[in-house]
Image (tube, rainbow, N blue to C red; front, side, top):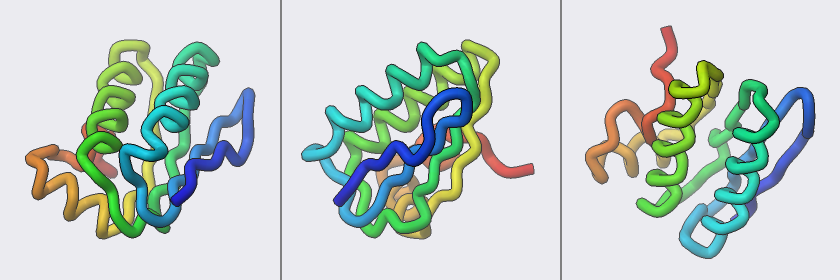
Length: 101
């Protein structure tokens, strides 16, 4: 499991890989808070997220909500595992992230 900040200011890319669970929630939350303070858009690479638990879905949903409030954009590339976990937990669209046009 890993949460990786690939690039920092001005372009933010956060990559989640493997089993993303409560064990990495604090690290992800810290990065999301730092991103919100940076006042820029965010790219979330979730394509290699094999398993995602509800604590991570809640963080991502909250980030999506805060991004909309701040008039910022999150571009997400979700894995099928993330989409399935989001559907099972009742998050539509996946984790509150923007739906592709």
